[in-house]
Length: 582
Ligand SMILES: Cc1ncc(C[n+]2csc(CCOP(=O)(O)OP(=O)(O)O)c2C)c(N)n1
Image 1 (cartoon, rainbow, N blue to C red):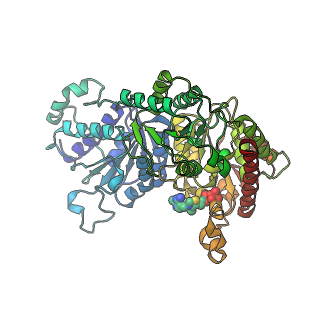
Image 2: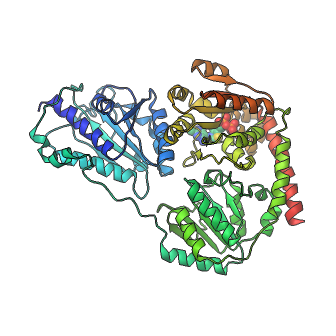
Image 3: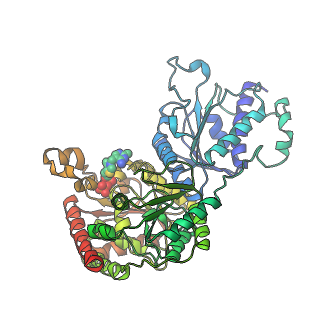
């Protein structure tokens, strides 16, 4: 085989081995050095290739896909800063334990550190954020073909292992890069004879065992039996089944449950949102659990953490499906590695129903809901709070929700209504909580779920990921974007820095005065800018009915938004105090 044939075959084997693992989505960015990989992916009968002019968007799209499928996509790009553009998505995938495969083309050995064009130090570029990284040799028949396939197998196993995350394969190629016709047979392929006759990968790794450890189940069961007051926290959970199991446990043992917006419980009709109770300091002082059990990942709201720091419970148990430390307040007394849903089920089966700690929640929730609903009256102006609340009640069946960072995720966490007939899967980027890549992640989420997705996002986050609007056109399941345009970072108005008026507006508020209508036009997307709650509800219903992607802009002001949040939270506090502490 000549050099060109080796290069072609080398890349073909890499792609084929990924496909044999069921990894068929390739997110490719254009470039020359990656030609052998791009062509191998493009010409494989079982792959789906999506093109991303912007690698950063490609990375976040792959992240969203992994969030909704549990599977990695393969990211392919050329050498140079193209690779570095994956960094933010790699950080988020690593922090949020999502599988991701980065297959980056590089220049060959003789061009490294020699001032060659578009050449940077690529091996290990993602530092501590990969589960594994490997430098491939330049394609060569001196390398056993089995070792190439085995490297791909190990990459897949590492990405989907005990702690899923990014794996970086850096693949140098020497010119010429363009593929050629392959020889029918070659001695190099002799060692792959058995592999070529079937369609299985060379090596399949076992899936990590996330069964509940029996000794931990027993230990927590004993804690619960001795506990006079237990509090359950549901952090990020990935499936409705897991969510159901945790909710059932809470009901079974009569413990109040605080369910985060990413727990897939927040919209459950049986969930009584403790988010509101947490606003009352008096409540926090009176309800003092001795045992807290946290299921799943992070929690968006900061009040549960504040409460636990104040309560100082004897036992804080964390149940999460990975071995990483999960203890931001250093108060965890038992850390359990298990699938949260399976652990909750095991516990529920072995735990006697305890004394019911039923707080007088129904009345509080009813009255709180009435306060929120007052802001949603049809003729009132649509605001960030009313938009979140109305949206939570209007999400169509078989569609999902993605919440951008900053206020959208918090507003939905705090003010969502409990839906009766639709419980949308809810995605967030809370691993590192960036305001970058939220549009691309939501697009990847829609691709993975094969469902329409609604994204609620602030104007700065929208601007940050503006070029990802190109992705909307080609999605088979539409992404609907609702932008809260308060002309800057609304969240900063809630911080003490807002008092430092000489620097606040210019250095924190950072208004950008850009035109969202024009952005929609530029990318060929439907657009609307309703002013009332009724207008928003009908605009959203129209967009959903159209089956098309589109943007709904909600124009507001940061000052009004702050005032409305303060007024509403004060009223909720009064309700809670009256019912629970009076
Ligand atoms: C990549 C990144 N840069 C900066 C930040 C800090 N940050 C957090 S919220 C925020 C403002 C976001 O504004 P916007 O998206 O308009 O949402 P709003 O605060 O108005 O809800 C910024 C800059 C971040 N989290 N991530």
